[in-house]
Every structure is written in C-alpha cells, then in structure tokens.
Length: 143
Image (cartoon, rainbow, N blue to C red; front, side, top):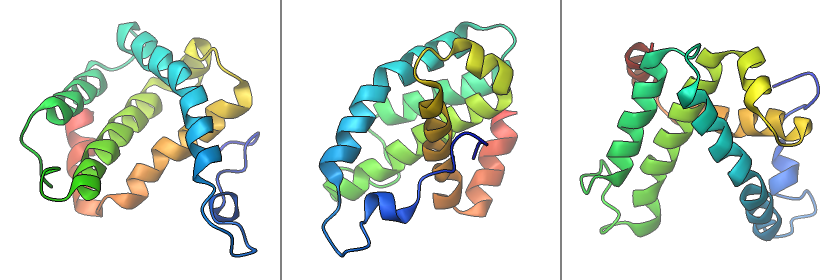
C-alpha cells in the first residue's frame, strides 16, 4: 500500500448494508485501467533496468496461461479453472513491478497516479492468495 492510496477495503467490494457485490463498478474500473496496465507491462519488459529474470517469469506465466495444460482444468471447473491463470498472471506482474522499483514504475505509468497504488494493491493480493510454499518457489524463480 502506498501513502497516497490506503488500499482496497472489503467495504468497497461488499457494502456494509448487506447489498450485493458491486461487480459492475469493479469490472468497469478494471476495464478502464487495463490499457494502462498493459502499457506499463510492455514498457517494463522493454526497459533494460528491469531484471531479466522477472521478465522471463512473466513470459513463463503467459506461456502457462496460453498452454492447454492447467493445474485446474477450465473444462472441468470453468470459473475455478481460470482462477489459477489469473492469480499466476497477477503474481508475475506484481513480481515485475516490485523488482523494477517504484521510480521506474512511476516513470512508465501514464494513468492517473492514484490508480497506480490501486493496481499495486490488486496485483499484490496474489501473494496473499497463493500458499507460502508456492510464493517462495516463484520468488526464487523470478529473481
């Protein structure tokens, strides 16, 4: 979490009044920031100051997502089958952003500054979802 952005709170996704998930707002916000995330990742991949191992880790994660072999097959459990792909990509992006450092990331980010903190928080959630054993192995692989 950054000083400018306190992070995502459960109340922002599940309102305290017991209402339903505000999925439409969440999806809309994600779609609006997605082009900025794609540009950020592309720029970080081209930047020679970013460690090569982090770039390779993102490439391997993308290859895993594109491959027909999955840890949890999407054909058997459609929604759950995509979760491992999404979490792995989020983890690889988080690793790339962390290893690049805040100065380089801010240099390449062209979206609203307050959204950069939100993006860091959201992709950083992948570290809390994955088991510690898995994150330690992935951290060693990505540098």
